[in-house]
Length: 159
Image (cartoon, rainbow, N blue to C red; front, top):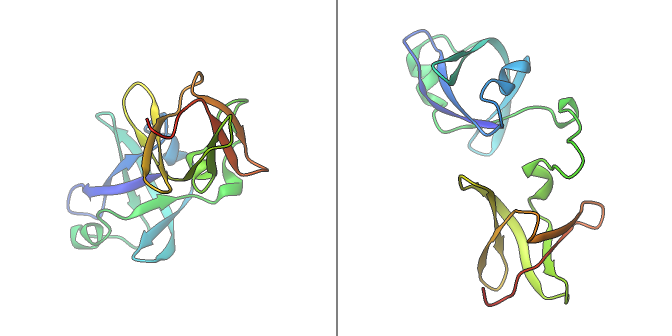
């Protein structure tokens, strides 16, 4: 849901780069998982607030600038079952990662490796025989089938 950007001040606060629609959504959660290397560590959020359109946060146990700097670039997640259900036709990015992408003829593109926020719309980064960048917009994405783990697109292999 976000990433630690940089330390904020000298008392362990951090500026957070959020991947949510509203910058302060992550502040609604009392606990965050922070990924250091390959390990996720659970932190309690002592304080989180908007400051000039950016989220700044203080985590319990992170009490100085050096400790905050050690978390720079670390991903932030929350417990999946604490998230609200997405609206009809909306998806959490984490639900799309790993889905197979095919077109209506059944041509396989590969699987969604990641999603890029590209201003006007999100873009699926699909890895298979080669990398495909496919806009995640209604006229191109025809169907997302989470149970079948597939996304059907109106796209061609040679695009």
